[in-house]
Length: 301
Image 1: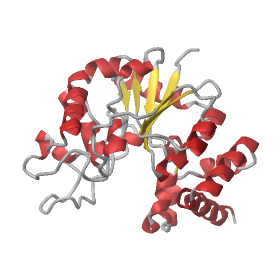
Image 2 (image 1 turned 60 degrees about the vertical axis):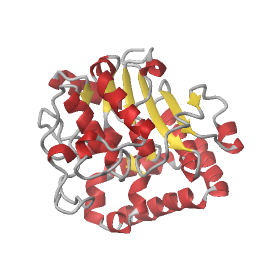
Image 3 (image 1 turned 90 degrees about the vertical axis):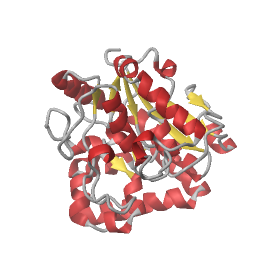
Image 4 (image 1 turned 180 degrees about the horizontal axis):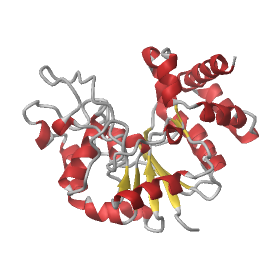
């Protein structure tokens, strides 16, 4: 298969594991030939393990000596040993709380086109610039605290991993030692200690590796804006009332096209079974599905 894609995620063995049935089901319904790799920091429950019995790419008890912090799992998805991806062409290391949707131009073809355009072994846009609140005196996500949108990035294998080898080794050691990142020594912030660290880390990895980074918000390094349809549906958006309560913002980040695709997905028996499994076992994750449904009802009313 040309442009073989692996969608990869790292997940904790707490309530977050209940995103896995939704994540895997949506991904496989979107692209039947897709590989899904799940790296678990801990052990999965019997029910989630049973759900995944036909998925051979599940790796439990990863990084047992690394402490859990606010952005540990999000950050580790960029530090997975590339040996797991050896027969794939592109890697999509995203959050487990995404619902992946099909597109006429597939994810892999879209992002591969961006890489061809930029001449870089990755495709990712710059994240938010305003809203920094981690340390007094730092007013925006800029300079060494620039963010690259980690949940919607794609890497070319093995080019990206060869290029970033030293940077990945550096950050993995930082996590293993639970130490202060050299870029944050003046702040005293340890790796993974704040929610957005994974995106800051990704920017720093690229800079350490000599890769050109995006400078305009929501744009790739070639200054072309990322198409928001490839953001699919992020259930994490529905954790924040100020975000999902802002209809204007939600229409920008959850496109009408993706709303229609989700309505179609809701009719699929495999999807319905995955949602029912979550409903029976995890109120917090199912609650996000209910908020998504409520939002979509308002959009199509």
